[in-house]
Length: 538
Image (cartoon, rainbow, N blue to C red; front, side, top):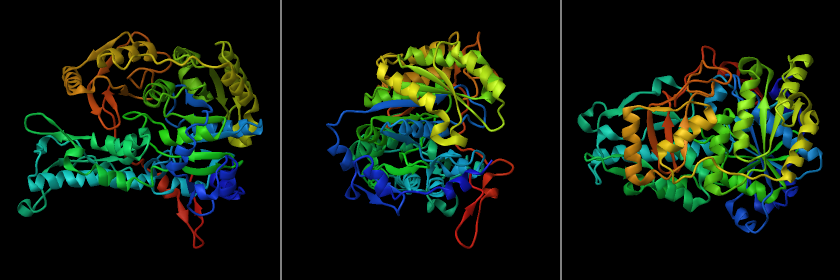
């Protein structure tokens, strides 16, 4: 198997101005970052507002293994296949985080002959968007601690500060820290603090859901930074810093335009986690893509019980966008772990939203034909279209049949509908997802969760959508329960409002927001030579 980085290096990239021209953008519409990367300013979106929206296809997956099932590769390969069928298509996906890239998973730019390019730049710093998120987030953290040190008003209780710091790297040593040590108060107020990875920042989620720069600034102002001694919430706008935070994000708000190996335009923009956030690329990039092409192929993190559900209720709910079709990725290794009953449950779940479902059986290099044919038959017996694809090794031509099926499904139309009304009580929303998506018999709320949900409701946030943080390894909240678990209840341990992003996070267990590095980090495989050629990146 040829490494991804070698395939990427051998590809012939077209100037990004040519890629832009293929979707009707002139060079004056671009902020160029070299020959192969550009940002498209938000003013372009304003010019396109009266254009009709193209069809939107979501790529999701069955319950995944810890290695992932190739959703990004499938997203890119499917778009390339649709382009080969003569369809004007754009991809809209998330930006990679340096943490996983240097840790366990590697990069997130697709694989093989279904990659977005230039692969090295996309995986390493790119246009600096994630650094802008980190800086805006940490500006607020610095202002909070200065506010405490200066004893400014409104008062913030040092024991009730909610806002941690972030860094775009896996570093378990930073999970819990002390700040303001020594110096007799010169170094600030001593208190417990900690770091999260940038992808877990609420600023990242806000960026992903903001419609424009003013929306971004307003949402940043609504961030809860802590509480005063009487329990009154204190928001970022009360510290007068949300304007500066938005200024730091000015360029990051403009979507990044790159290309696939086969020259299909791709917006790579945003990168929120898919557990404590919604796990989708930015709203502005998706909207722009739908104005510039007839078909937009996008994805959501983790399996369909997490990523697709949040895509529908949070991203589509925020933007009033309507998906035209969903592709469920199935792999041999996930199928062997979870079985056909798991695939069936995900198909049933997606069908509840009224969107046509197709199954993509994503081939890996060591898969045996007989096994894949058996899986294909089992999936087709569920009554939905299913095809075996080989997008990694063959590019777009590795799945033309699936692409045609997606086009046909989009033309047939969908009747999209959410599973809950946002005006329902928060507990009722949790119960609906637990029973209808996870297959639980009900929900057990801890006393702490009950109190937190009541507080969130009393603060006026009960009408927000929910974002359930649970294990991606099972339909249940127990990672050891594979397949289609039955006879279980979901246990809710706590809740937190992401007031700026506009959703309430529901915790079903302890969720790690600062990953650690494995025994042998991927960073140890990455090197660079005297000519600037990078190796070991995957």
